[in-house]
Image (cartoon, rainbow, N blue to C red; front, side, top):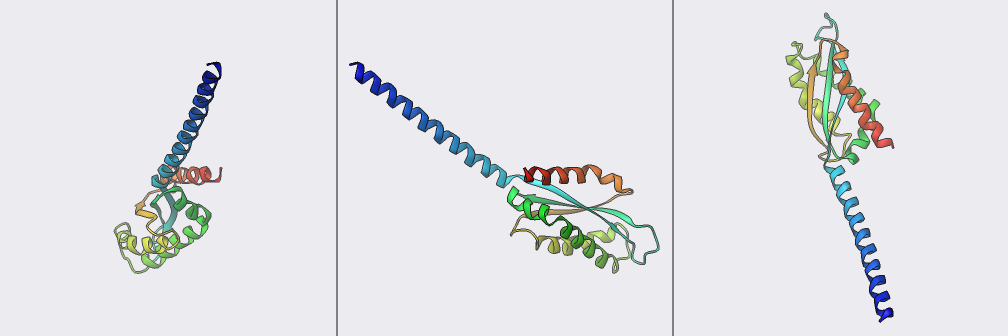
Length: 154
């Protein structure tokens, strides 16, 4: 009888350990799936000159919604290249545009296409352009981007 009780107790411990291990694996899978669905809002700062260069440069913030941690890695790894692409696209587009803020709306499509080439398929969900009066208007957005990239390095 004593041997039977020992067998039952040891069997219960083994089953409990396997159940805990299965629960840990399920939690890890759920965390990975949540990271893949998480939306990251990342920003790139640039300047735009008016169409003939007669006025002061206008600060512009390009904000992108990137889906998932794996899609954010190419953005963070290639941040200087993303900045150069944004600047190149903005400069080439504003030479044709005569409007200050309104002309930026026509640049959204070419800018989205140029930046999307650096990301995996369908990683970039949205792109938005904001015009500011001073570069400091965008400080919070840029700090958020920096924190998101720093979190991936850990």
